[in-house]
Image (cartoon, rainbow, N blue to C red; front, top):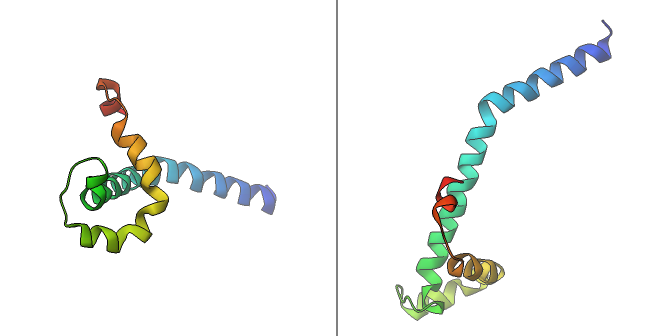
Length: 88
C-alpha cells in the first residue's frame, strides 16, 4: 500500500466517521439557528405583519441588520403550512 493510498483511506475513514457522528449534530445546529433567527425577526419586525411586540424605537435601531433577511422572512411567514412541514 503506497502513501497516497493510505492518505485516501484515512480521508475516507474520516468522512465516514464525520457522517456517522457529526453530520446530524451540524444539521440540528443549523436548524436551531434558523428557528432562533426566525423568532428574533418576528419579535423585532413583527409589526410588518401586524404583530406589534416591541416598540418601534427598538425595531428601527435593529432595522439595518435585518434588512437583508426581511423578504425571505416574510415569504416564510406567509407560506401555507401543512403536516409534512413539521416532519422535515
